[in-house]
Image 1 (cartoon, rainbow, N blue to C red):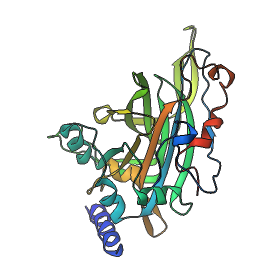
Image 2: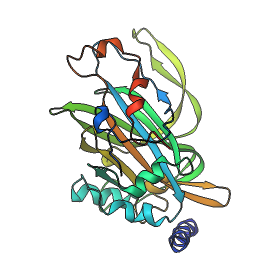
Image 3: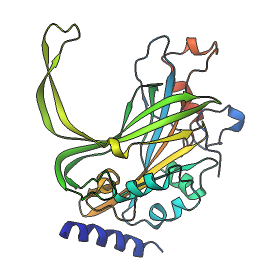
Image 4: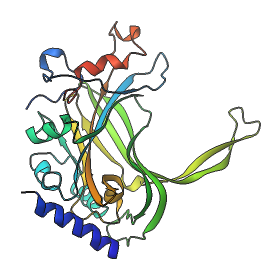
Length: 296
């Protein structure tokens, strides 16, 4: 309970201390936001076969002092909650919340997301339709306590994880009208790598691999429908202490606690029947020229 009180105290102190352009990754240049002094965004490439449709996942974290009035309140005012009331409530019980912006992002969010002083890990990752892609969010964390609940009436049983790394597993499937159904699941890897025996590909025996233990939270997985210009924002609720919200979206640096939100946009890199697609199976970097928030 002392740690929970400490977390709430830090958030309260942060609150007391706190006195537009387009949002499109994949549209033609005429409708993209005009960015001053564009800088390169790192590309993380995933291997694909000739018949798989490639995806681009553009992510970054906005970083502020814990208790930021904007990350706790202002950011969510004009956003759309894409989930049912039950899903939103269950995520809140786990210290989490999310929203979608379907038009230009708020000016303050754009300012924070374009500033080198407040943005972390801007990345363009490639993936494949129908296959999960893990997006790192926070970690490694030396030690954290998480009490997750999967139903409304369940009682949280806090678990301590050491050397924890928090990530979001994202799987996108194609829908009509150039939209994607995006499924997201929270995951935590933790502890040291341990030897595991797994069957070989031909089934003739077992091979040893070293991997870390992992916790997944399928009951908290959610699905949203996103167009190319839509921005998914994920962060902590008002009461994240010793919950997934704290593990994923708070970081302690020396004597300071930082709070973050994750920004995610996703779209296909190949269009059916597009003759240019076959020429650029390994050129996901070409899309970087049109990324929202790509400039300073």
